[in-house]
Image 1: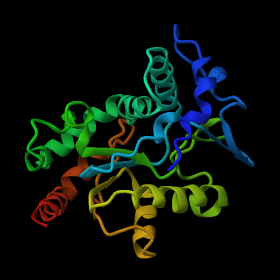
Image 2: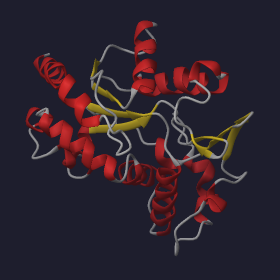
Image 3: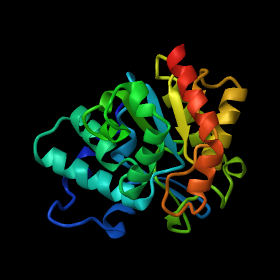
Length: 246
């Protein structure tokens, strides 16, 4: 699959590397992919690298502006230091995806489920660093989507009411998952992502994987995270164990 980063490389090289990037730098026509009414989709290098050797896949709705900013800053810095397109794609993926407190919440829950032991690694925090070969990260809408210039949350409008969003979720996302050659553990973040994965499985548009349905969204904004985790913990552990028995 063509790496679109090569198309945007020259524009990214022109971005400043001596300061934090802003919306005025990134939410511009140079990076605008599509617009539909009050929805805007912008390119981000965060979605280019696909780890085909992964055993576990984290799935969000769409990269927010903060992830978008980090992705561009990492890409500009990598190009500045002579990295290739492929090297830059990988650096961006593991630096920007689900960056911030979300990673900490995520690894705490996954370690409590014993995933680190099943993978034979010290902690699932290592998936972002020393054991990147085990992890792929993506979103059902792989490029940043904004509604009225704010991060799209999956609700306004709903994906099934927008042909634009349906195309990304049911075509692009499905095609990305189908590049993974073996069954993996899918970890959907939140109900919107769960619903999309269920639809794709039901329609036979993606291969059968082990899915951690009911895994709480790791965002700090999810005030029900700990309760949801305790309620679903036994089921989630059984799903993980069943995968490693195959």
